[in-house]
Amino acid sequence: MTVTSSDGTTTAPDGGGGAVLLHKLTMIPEDDGVMVGRPDTASYAVFPEEGAEALRMLEAGAPVAEVAAWYERTCGEPLDVDDFLDVLADLGFLRGTGGDGEDEPAGPVRWQRLGNWTFSWPAWLVYLALMVTAAAWMIRDSSLRPSYHDVFFTDHLALIPIALTVVQIPCILVHEGYHALSGRRLGLPSTLTISRRLYYLVAETRLDSLFSVERKRRYLPFVAGMLADAVLISGLTLLAVALRGHGPAWISALMLAISFTCVMRLLWQFMFYLETDLYYVLTNALRCSDLQNAARFQVRTLFRRWTRRPPPVADPDAEWSDRDRRMARWYAPMLVVGYGFSLGSLLWAGIPTTVHFWSQINNRFSDSGTATSGILDAISFVGLTALQFGLLLYVTVRDRRAARESRGDSEREEEQGPNGQEPEIAGVA
Amino acid sequence: MKKMSIRKAGTIRLTSSAYCL
Image 1 (cartoon, rainbow over the protein chains, first blue to last red):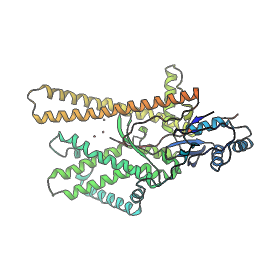
Image 2 (cartoon, each protein chain N blue to C red):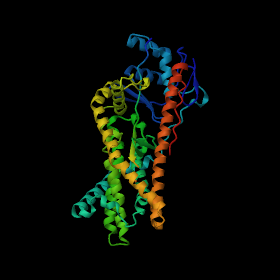
Image 3 (cartoon, each protein chain N blue to C red):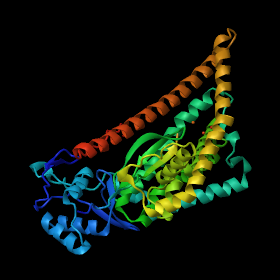
Image 4 (cartoon, rainbow over the protein chains, first blue to last red):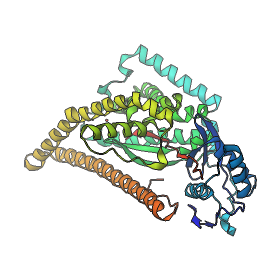
């Protein structure tokens, strides 16, 4: 039989015993097997120890027949070689037999030097000095402590949402940039896109390539974004101090307003049930690999049982580890409470606020006596709200489509054998 | 013939909320 690997090259793993060529793979021991994958394509799977050993033999050039014979001697029963090679092709691990099958020489990833510098000891000293100095100023001067009052940095209320939207974008890019640089420091690629968590629009750094390093080296990339937030808060607070008495008063106040938005985003990370950065810190410490989806599946199963419907069908390729399932029993109730809290606060505060705003806006447009500044204020609010809802709708439709294509692929594979095509995911690179 | 039990890995997606309901 012939299978097609994800880069479109074709191999003929007929189980007839010839050698197969593999891409460069990383192997990291986990609790229940070995995490094997390609950092360049972010394709990873957990193999049993004997599966990883079979891959090592294939990498060393052993013919398939020899590996199959070794497997049978070791495990006491013959391996379904065709199925094994199908899985490797599906994961994109097989190299083509054509001339284009050679691995690109793996040069260093871009920005690796900057990544090293960002987390070097002189940089850590600078971060520490900034945070300690800012904390000392906050203790001495209560007006520097983060407060919602900071948002109102000017009397021109219409400017506030526009200004805070514009200045937040570089702050978010710094946060995500620190995640990316901490990965680059380890020689790992990443991609930046926009995504959604419940009803929150988020910037997202995809760092699946962290599966190529051992667990204890993943913590710094997980917390790098929050470190960036803390450094920004400290730096902006000290800048506000330095600018006091120089130039217009609103510039110093604007620094504290930007700092406050960073504080809010830092607090948002504590909503771990939305798969925030802290969720990854916690699940890494618990040695889980996909706790969120294991818990969501349990909640869905329970909900369907209560409503007397058939249980949901799990993705056969994404079965969870025993540890994920065990931990999910504890985590699932927290997930339900967390989602309840977020949706409750949306219903209690978010939606009424939005409705009130829209009725005010409507009054302004329909009232002939509204001043021009009031109209501009209303237009800016409409524009920003439309932009957010538009982006939220876009990422929802995009992710649904990707999930549907991915499901369609696996169903077609069940019928016809694998085609290994990954769904195209539009992203903002 | 034994099919090897292979489990696809999860994902690692680090986020920042985006002017925060």
